[in-house]
Amino acid sequence: MDKVISEDGTPIAVYRTGAGRPVVLVGGAFSTALAVTDVAEAFAAAGFEAVTYDRRARGDSGDTRPYEPTREVEDLNAVIELVGGHAAVLGHSSGAVLALVSASQGSPIDHVFLSEPPFRFGEEMPDPALAERLQRHVDEGEPELAVREFQLEGVGLPEPVVDQIRDSPMFPGLVAVAQSVVYDTVLTTEFATPTEAMRAVAPPVTILRGAQTFPFLIAAADRLASLLPGAELVVVEESREHRLDGPATAAVLRARLG
Image (cartoon, rainbow, N blue to C red):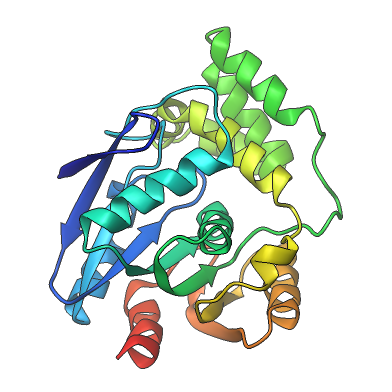
């Protein structure tokens, strides 16, 4: 593990495996670097240097308030600087939103891969006060409530599924990164629709989605592909239930990055 210091002084934990052209993985909600180890290993096996990192308020990274999405762009820039000053970037879920925001703000990204970005395009938006409510739960020592409300309102999971997750062994790990769901809510609300700059990014764009995933993510990927000139849409049959399949995704990268 390396640590880089972002522009606002926040330490960001970075993990690197493999050798070759660097590909930075930007995880989605609740995701840490550890959670995408299998994907990173598949990328390394395909001949890339796979770079994962804990987004702020997660894992071994720090956090600095107040939050705004630009801080996470600076975090990603610091990670890219560590691995040579430019890289391909694959963002998954809210990480895909962050990757496209970063590309639109001039981050040194050679090729941006967007996996199931949750753009809502102004439709079926969560309560505008959701982020504020989630932050209040965290500040009042009730991170479990923040996790639950984010899953119900921010993600749109059915209540029985949320109850099952609450009673599962994975729940404590979600609670540990409860602060980050506030940030993901801010990010995906502010950029619920891609800006003009996001629709005109310079690096090549490849949009990925599974054949079987949340219907609104299928619609979002397809709509985004129609809005970004030159963007390529790839359906990765092996990626299911909003999870990246490492080997299949690595094959997509290999075909486009060489």
